[in-house]
Structures are given as C-alpha cells and as structure tokens.
Image 1: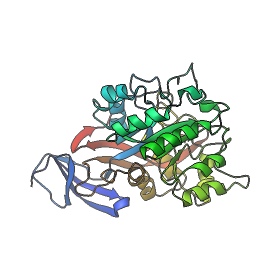
Image 2: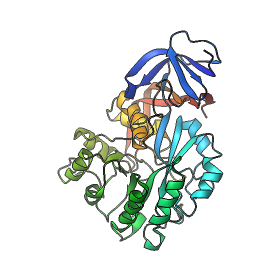
Image 3: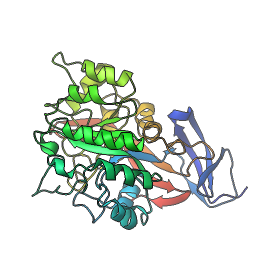
Image 4: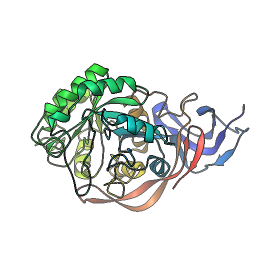
Length: 376
C-alpha cells in the first residue's frame, strides 16, 4: 500500500497498547496505517535511536491565543512539545467560546479540544498585573448557557471546567462547584476542577467529585496539598480514586511540588495524567512543556512506561477519545519522536526546589495527522 509518511527504524513505544519494538510505522490518510519491518511506498524519515510514542496529549493547556491574556500559540507549542492534542482547560466560557472556536480551534494546525468554563467569560483577568478570580462573582456562573454551548459543540468540548480556591473563587468555597456540576449534568459531561488555596479544602472537593471527573493541580504544595497530617495520601483522595475520580498534574505556575510528588508516589498514589497547565505565565518556566514535565517524573523514580502512558493513553481515556493516544492501526496519525538522553539536567518545581535529573526527554519531531512537523 502507499503511505503518506513512513518513520523508519524507531523504537515504537506505546505502553498502553503493550507495544515496545524497533520497527517502521506508516501513516496514510491521516491515520496510523501499518506497523512492520521494511515498510516502503512513501516519503521516509529515519528515526533510528529515537522513541516513537503516540502523539502526546496535554490535558491541561491554555491556548486561546490572542483572545485571552493567558493564551499561548497552540501551533508553536505543538511543535515544541510533541503534544498533538491540546485540551484547553476553561480559557473560554459560554459567552466567548464561539470566538475561541472560530479564531483559534478551527484555524490551528494542532488538534484543540476544550473544557468549557462555567463562568460566562471564562478566565478573563489573568496576567502579571491583574489577577481577578472569575469564580468569585457568582453572577458570572452560567450553567444553563454552558450546557447549551457544550451540547452544540460536542465535537470539540469534552467537559465543563470550574476554578475553586482563594485565588480563583475568594470566599465562595464550593458554591461555584455546584453551578459547574449543574452544567455538567445537563450536558452529560465530566468536570475538570481546579483547586488552589482553601477554601474549599482538598478533602471537601474530593468528596464531591463523580466518577470520570478530573481534579487538576492534584500534586499541589501546601496549602491544599493532597497529603494528610501523617504525610500520606489523604483518605478522601484514595476514596475518590476508588470510585473513578481522575487526578491530573496541571503543573502550571504554582501547582506542582517535588516534595508532594515524592510522598504521593511513595504512598502508592501516582497521578492518572501528567499535564502542564501551560499558559503565558509559565511557558518560560517552571512548567515549560510536556517533555520537561514528564522528565520531572522520571527524575523522582517513575518508569518511562508509566510516564508515557500517563501522557498518552490515560488522557485519551479521560476525554473519552480512544482514537487518540495510541499507535494502533486505524488510530489518529499522531506520533511524538523523542530522545531520552543521559546527563545532568536541573529541573525546578513551583516552590523553587531543583532536582538534577540523570536523564531527560527531548523532542526531535512530531507527526500530526500523518504529516511530519519539525521540532522548534
């Protein structure tokens, strides 16, 4: 058969599908077409010595480029991070989602999906100078319209977003959550919930989430850390996971600490999903991109197979898109070409702690819809 692109001789690494072998992979008509030895019949790229994983899925991004102050350029980020699917986490709400869709989602090279904010205007005041929590003013909560907009845009909207905590919702506690839950239930969609400093507490939020809902910023530093007074995972978090709640990193500017992560891993509680919460205030550090955030987990002892699975298979499951995050023939024709290099690499969390990693991931190229994109 004819291929639009063949990657030759890479280590095909898709832990979610149990794939780990040196082989060729061919793409045709925007999909993975065939895996095998000696494939021919199309343009070729030599990728010997590199990892070829499914295209990375960044479950928490802000890519309302030039429409929201926190937005970054999705296409530049896709090429730099090998993240072929970018899930925007509430940059837009029902009042401005039409603009986000028309001017960014439909024009971008990268695949963009979205959690729709229950706030009418989304995250509208987020910068180095102005920081107004959109969930603090309950007049902005718009669950009925959010459900209507989600229903009308099911091809790209994957859930409802709300931000809770002292910075995002002031003294409102769980009040904005109930508006978001109303929207999610009307639309039949999961929630993604941001948590920063209390109120509400981490435990209170865990007890309210449903199976399939996502708690993002799950490895925060104190306050509202997922660790109990005994230094172990909170029982409320353990109970939430047992009933199907998903825990997402959402690194960002203030939401990932090595100290928290080490204790959670030691307590048998890894994250379900590794994501960046990349936005205008953290793309130049401390979050940077997917490969940097993934490398931080390698640095504290998580295996490469688990890091890749939590950056491909598991976010695909969270957004209910089994065609993504896999190299299975017939799936979307996305792949990340990565190198895993040895050395001494300083990696810094949001508290300023720096860990020197002995190995680190780097992007060498990206395949999006069967097309090769050079790394930036």
